[in-house]
Image 1: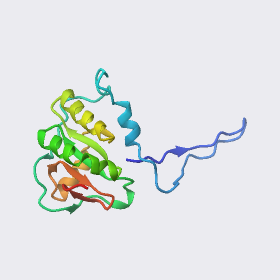
Image 2 (image 1 turned 90 degrees about the horizontal axis):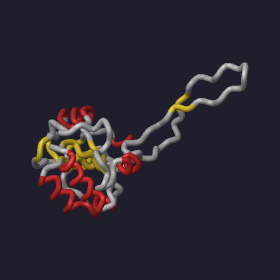
Image 3 (image 1 turned 120 degrees about the vertical axis):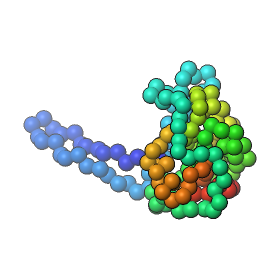
Length: 167
C-alpha cells in the first residue's frame, strides 16, 4: 500500500517540458495510515463518498489450515491484515490488535454488511492504534483465492505469506 508518484520539472517559457518520469526512491512510505485517517471518526457522517455498502468479498469467515505464500513479499512495506465485518474477524482483531500494532500492520475490511459493521471494526482498530480502510479489493482477493486462501481474517506478512496466527 505504497505509492510511487510520477514527477515532472517545470520548464522555462519557450522551452519544451521534459518527459514525465517516474522516480524510484527505494522503499516507499505506506499510504494506508493517511487514508485511514480520512475515513476515521465516530461522528463522521458516512465513510467516504464512493464507498458503497454492503462490501462484498469472495473470502468468507473461516479457518486457514496452513500458511500460504500469496504475494511477492519484496513490495510489501508493512504487514497487512484482512478482516470482515463478522464476529469472528472482530474477535480475531480484538485478540491480536496489540501484536498487529507492534509489527506495524495496516488493515483492510473486505466485507461488511453496512456502514455500522465497518465502523465497528474501524473503532476497534483505532483502539489498538491500527490504520484500517474499507475494501473490497478484487485483485487482492484473486491472489488469495488462486493460492487457496479463501478465508477471513488473515495476516499477510512482509514475507508475502498469509497466516491467521498473529504476534
